[in-house]
Length: 467
Image (cartoon, rainbow, N blue to C red; front, top):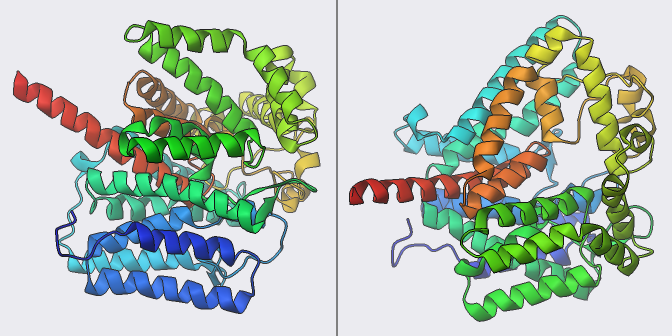
């Protein structure tokens, strides 16, 4: 909780961070390193000598605002930026988060209580611990590769750090992270466009730089009306629409699917309360095909048109075997589903109990091999015939924790979908698509979950008080 007169969580400091991220993109590595060290020293100073909670807020927000792997996909050596800086092969961001954790543990009376953990975080806790245990068994049986196991550990284990650090923040603080984060992401995109500092996706396809907020941005920003004043909100929306229509923002297949899911959720959630609005959404769903065709033609010549065509192919032709052979992201996802299904049906133990962290699947039909090395999988996945990182959470959970984890996950997703809490829905979108991709998306998912659960708790508590 921020108190008057104490050190504050300032928008201006976050804005400076964003400006430096954009301006230094592609700059001299020595200059990048100096700025990165200064940023981490600032965080350490705030945590040790000012307000610990404010320092945690800055650290988490810097982590989410920093430019990630999407922007550096075409280079072999990561730059020494806030996100990319490495020490002895380890992410300095992770090492610093461990340092912050230790500082907090030393200065705080640490008390662990399962009662404070939400249902969704309990699922993640179960999934991580269970998959770790099963993965270790398969390593001992020489069926899982140790480097893949380590990669999963580095992706998922920040969960424990973030769970503890977020416990220091109240609902207002976490909302402020989201509020400032989305606004600054729009500013970052505009700065990127103005300065011509762009990410490259594929050959010759350039888009504005992306941070961790950017993935969910095109959906979430339209739901943020209550968190900004009218003019700021309309300014953010108009800027986003301009960037979207102009094709400056990268739109992937998952984001297109997200948009369809959002339309269905709005239809189900608001049908009774605002029937005319829901009717408009229903019409949009009914006319999805022509809408897709218009959008495909609008972005013709861009990778966005290709992505739209991939999703449209599912609506137009439900032939999964044919789609699995196509060189497209949607084809790759379908190929994974078919391969995983046949692999687990023929391995009943894996079907029920999973393969744990480090677990992979063989390329049974030759669908996955063409993606190794260039995108999707590591080159050694092809050499080993063990494809490790799957592209949908439902596949990842089934492979790692079997039907046991899949049932728990499915029940959780259904319950979240039926709630009318906006932040619960945003959490659902993250859990259904990208929470497992990297630690930053895991963090953003956990922030949404924290806000959603504290909102739910407040509503339930107020109802019980009235009774």
